[in-house]
Image 1 (tube, rainbow, N blue to C red):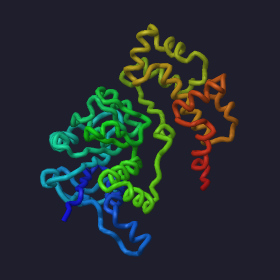
Image 2 (spheres, helix red, strand yellow):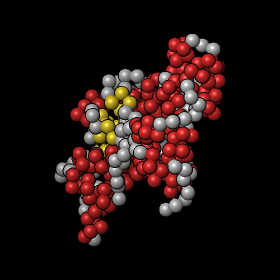
Image 3 (cartoon, rainbow, N blue to C red):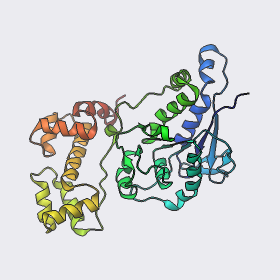
Image 4 (cartoon, helix red, strand yellow):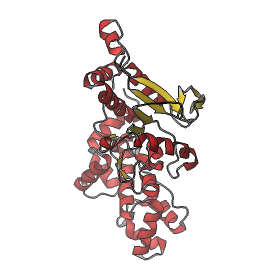
Amino acid sequence: MTRKPVIALLAAPTSSAAILYGLYDVLYSAGAVFLDMVAGAPGAESLDVRIVSSDGKPFRCPGNVLVEPHASMTSLGECDAVLVCDMYSPIHSVPRQDYAVYRDWLQRLHDHGVLIGSVCSGALVLAEAGLLDGREVASHWAYAELFAKEYPKARFQRDSILCLTHEAEGIITAGGVTSWNELVLHVIRRFCGPDVARQTAKVHLLAGHEGGQLPYAAMNRHSGVEDGAIGACQEWIAQNYHLENPVQRMTALSGLKARTFARRFKAATGRAPIDYVVEMRIEEAKQGLEASDDPIDDVSFGVGYQDPAAFRRMFRKIAGMTPQDYRRRYSRLARGAA
């Protein structure tokens, strides 16, 4: 009897049930459920799917959802792929003490040719294991600054939903939260073939995130409280982003020389002053588009752009879509429409 590919889902008490059990349900159904839907008789499961934790003991993840792993890392045995579920981390620090237990195990599996994948903050676990050095990586857009600070050797792709650049090297990473949809179908396609992947997508109504992550991203307004001068400028710009020459005004407010201000501002916020202003303006414009019917040109003027064409170009660059498309996507949610 041919051995089924073994897919291990690595989870922890900080993993979300939606990602863990979403992956599990879809992988477990591959090869079986579609035939039941169209012919009334289930087929055989194509994959051997196992939930794994550091010690194999039951735990509860956020929401008090019970997880009963099939195995511990050391008792898992042979496997073909390990998918690291999200393991929540604050956006400004890495819980290294929590991730350390996985480092040697993941490195050893990678060295033996096992495919290693991650979803959302699970990429931080891979980074902590040294598996993302020199490689492109997808993770949740909110972790872009954290990666830049803590893992500068990794090349964070803020817009990426599924990064396959290094699949030949045994590494694949998926972006934020529901990016597991793309990851799970890719894994099924890899181990079971394209027909099973298509059938599974039809069963679970899985669609892609063709627009990438940018339409979902929001500005990380990290406060520079450790630098009083920069913190005061952040508070000022939050209310005055629409004024002309905002960087010059902040520089004057700080009492610093322009070059010193720019250096300290980037150290505190992770962005150059002008980039911070632009992102704040676009973030405020998003809120205006979501909550009002104001003409787009009026929204543009309200956030400090006197040239509507320039506003539209910058909006598309940052949000990944036009202001019109953004309003169409999110205004329905803001107003409670179906």
